[in-house]
Amino acid sequence: MDYSIIDTGGSRSFPAGDAFLNGSSKAGNVVVVLGTGAGKALSTIKDRKAAILLELGTECLGVHTGESRGNEGSNVLGFARFRLGEAPPSNLVELVKQPNTDAAALAAAREVFESAGLGVAVCNDFPGRIVDRLLRPYLNAALRRLDEGLATADDMDTTLRLGLGYPEGPIALLERTGLAAHFDVTQALYEALGDPAYAAARRARVAKMRS
Image (tube, rainbow, N blue to C red; front, top):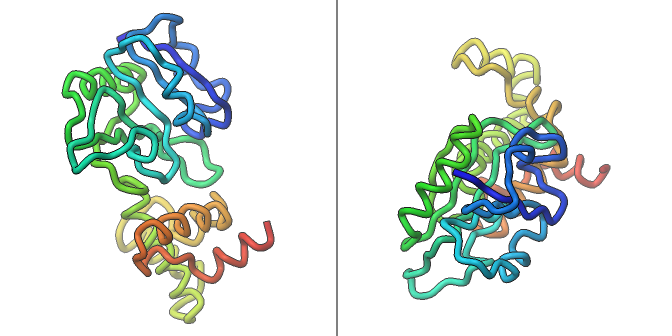
């Protein structure tokens, strides 16, 4: 499936030099809109396309397409390639659909990313999508247990690695990818959802204030 790219700058999914950027064409039947201005660029796409894919932050797709009584959906989908803090992007792309998203558009979107060697997971239109909704409470809990003195950071990491087979413990993971970046995402989810599990832990808040 041929795809073209509109790059509004600041893409976290496909930064400069990514191979996905080199695979685009000028007249693709799928348009991939990258960057922090992706939503605003939607109105500039006039030609009918098989699918229009908007890069999202933590926000809902409906912020850009509008919502109507639970009947929203078209050939426009959201997406984000999962990236933890300042670490390189992973191979996971989360596709965001609405209740009446066109099935052919969803299939075209999946084909674009899978043809580029990326894994695709599909989720409904919720803030934060799948990984962040599952991961951020876990990381917040680890930081709070560290504050409570449950164990040292090294022992907590060792327990999760050896006990559950995780490749990296939560504290080491946050140190590598950025506590301030964790604050940004989890605080945005807390404000959107109101769930205390997403309220940024003290250490993440301190890191943000120092950044």
